[in-house]
Length: 302
Image (cartoon, rainbow, N blue to C red):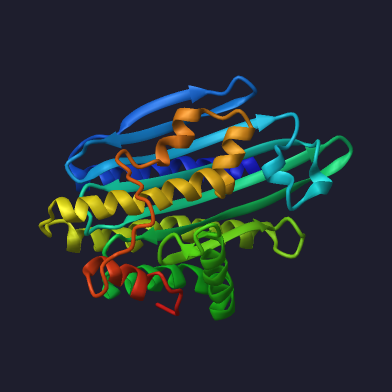
């Protein structure tokens, strides 16, 4: 029952977002449908070397399986061995211009099933912003839009909970460093029986529909700022942190790989040009150091 209600919204969200991004960039996203051998499939929408986006993807997936992967049962061991159904939309956008931030958004639904037992469902998702050069107006706008999406579904307290959760989640423990400036994150919403389906799905829809309003005004403001090799070099260095997080900590990436998902679609989130340096630190007082000194410090931006 839940899947029949949720799936049309996910596919519609993917279409609406891609339509707006194509209009912004001027280059069409490639459409790549795929089937998963173990059950299910999806539609990957990808842009590479666009006018604005260096690489980006807006993916829909709907997969089924006979046993929940380890990444999905780490916090719910009682569901190990159950059949599962998982669907959602996940996007990552990497602009060419280093003055424009990378962004991520994901909304998803899981259903765990076992013979003779009621299905267990839950929702998860969120969005977060990863600037290379920070602008306070941009970060405040992003967080204010996130907050407005949550307020009807739990008020100030719920926004604070999801904002703080995002700050904790998108954190590189081995670097003792945030990935970006945060946003929203939630998972397992409804799994404990404390949140009803309409509320959980309503919050998830609100977050997904808020994405374009959160991100497009930022890149509209910054897309024409001139940049050179210095800015591109720093962007490539900071993109390394994005790769590290996605491959080491990201639950969605781990779930996709462990469940036998399509690797090309899962790893479309990776930036196309990345650099690592040994023990590099920005020059004090430089524009690059402002990212560390001002923006990579969690605060109440909204």
